[in-house]
Length: 306
Ligand SMILES: [Zn+2]
Image (cartoon, rainbow, N blue to C red; front, side, top):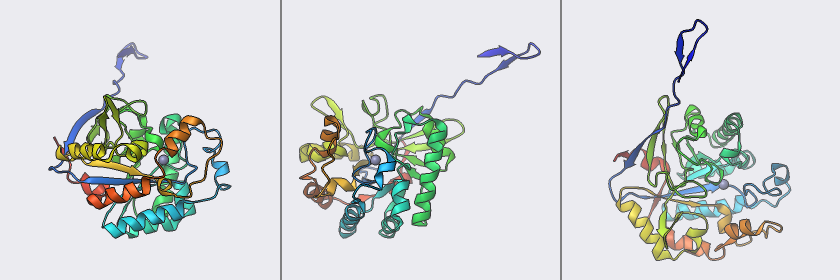
């Protein structure tokens, strides 16, 4: 686009560069990557009651117990994971961040107050990110350069939040769903390097696959809790045989046998949150026994342009 300058000379406004996506792979079979979103049971998005941080100190906290049990189980099985901490959690329970790092897990950032990235302005996102990164790094005494947004809310490769992440020193984001409504079918299913001219970072999407003609996030939330285990295993095998890390996600509250009832939560949110919780601890134990999990950092160095 060209416009006339003050002296009548045409000045060019550079076009906003489109992100360039380079698909990445590693030697097959790629490993399974376990990620943990370290938040408490009341950290749901977009709910008028539970999402308000002013109420959070009034809820019965469960995360020390539930995340502690999960980290213990990982150590017993010789697993590593990437633990994405909310800044809010890191400030209240810095020992959890130290414990995760001490057990050999990678420490990452899950935002500060669990607000969806696409519901914040650019400045709000940068502020939330800075507070979270500072809290997590101070608590753990480590640097944190991998990120996951609340509720998979970096929706597309052109999202402004990715540039903010790169500017803040993050080298990898794991927040983009290759399916709607959380993301888009047009998003990459496997890992990609996103270049935008003045910055680049790796996007590592979650394990997904088609079930009965519909693409689902096989590696997390209710599909991981309720789909037939052979279906999940086949989806995991497909990714790993293609040289794509199979990224799974677990929340500490999914393992809580005394999960609070969350009265008043709208029906759809309740279904998504509670479906399959009862059987999940045993299911996760079976899944962990099948193969060793690694962290995001373990695969980043091995990914190469496909
Ligand atoms: Zn979350």
